[in-house]
Image 1 (tube, helix red, strand yellow):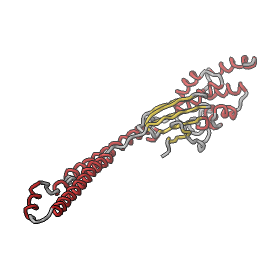
Image 2 (tube, helix red, strand yellow):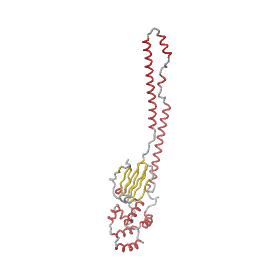
Image 3 (cartoon, helix red, strand yellow):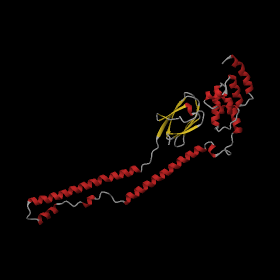
Image 4 (cartoon, one colour):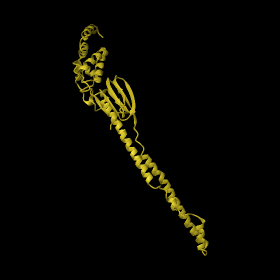
Length: 300
């Protein structure tokens, strides 16, 4: 820090004791000789957001958590204590932030998360009922259908009495005729044995296919890896609605989260983030720098 900065900062601190949050940040910025556009580029934000912070015009559609993160990054950039500014910000936001009763239902904190969670539970209940109904129908069908291996009942008995009857009714036949009759009987027995084997083979296979069809679907577990090259707010939720990560991340920070896919990801500045899903890169080229982005990974 230069000698000029050392002489000006005490004066700014005396003024900041009564100045609002935005005015304090504006004075610190002007003391460094920076423009709003320069600050916006350093923080990867738009100049509109910097103007809203310095003028305390918190009516731009952003949540309170986003503004707190912006002001903290702004203060750290200007080497100003962010704790005092955030304490004063709570009083300011208390005046300009509408109450929960006046807010639309979609903007009430936690309402959207509860809707997503109830939606997931409802889908699970409906899916479970369908599986139970299908399994019951298959069970009733199996009980009402006669057993498949009926071939053994049609096999003629093989005994010596039949051969004896043939030999008694044909006393004058020669040995060649008797051999012909015995060969015909043996062929019939082999044909019946083949039919029985085919029936016994087909029965378990059909049952196995029915059991495989009634198995419930499984949810896939996945992993997301984030690499941050700049300051960025991030929220991550899995398919069950559980929040896996939230907060403002610094440049160079890397994190990995696991859960049930698909994931819902909210980014404050997607241009400074690289995401990999199961080690495969996620395409973020369609996002705008400094704009809030909400994506589903993997895409439906």
